Length: 266
Image (tube, rainbow, N blue to C red):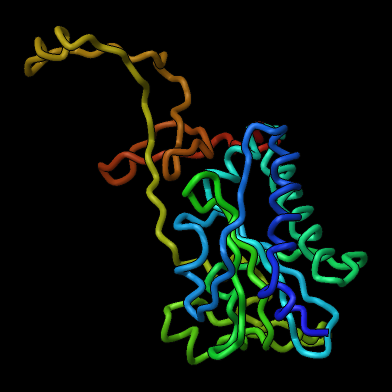
């Protein structure tokens, strides 16, 4: 059976798809079906703003695909009527399977697959027929029947030329292989990383007026009592407390408490 010739002779598949879409829209739209068209330039036959494309592979002797491309406006109307994007896509799938039933082939066991409008034609030279589903003069969907193979998957060279990510499979790790000595202890990797250590004697809050009134000799009162331990911060996080000491005419901090996630350790 040549399903393509059948579709060229009559628009049954497109009419069946249009009927399902009308029912999904609860009769809010009435569709008509255009004349069959034949062109390798599928982009010229599908809606200008295609929002969804579904295809099925037909069980014929030659590789044959039936697809439907739906416009953004029709998909939005389906979503609004049916209440969700999932339900709208399911309605488009039902329309596609109804179209399959009009080719003389059974739709049972066929599962619609998402695709791209540009791939509906498959390889160059494939014979195809496209029939538009119209509302007035606006093309809201197109049913495409094509005989011939799909476009081959792009090679890694093509992906690289397009700037796309190239999939790569890595050899499985050997669980019996011991990690290098440098990786045995994760801390070894950061031993030489420098951290900023800050000692905080206390804090105070001043208004802008008080800040502007500061002069040499002014005293700023801190919230820390005399003799209280000072906080030791590493990159802004408190890690210890200690007391101020003088070592060779320079200030230092004698650590008295270590702050951890479990509390303070003396």
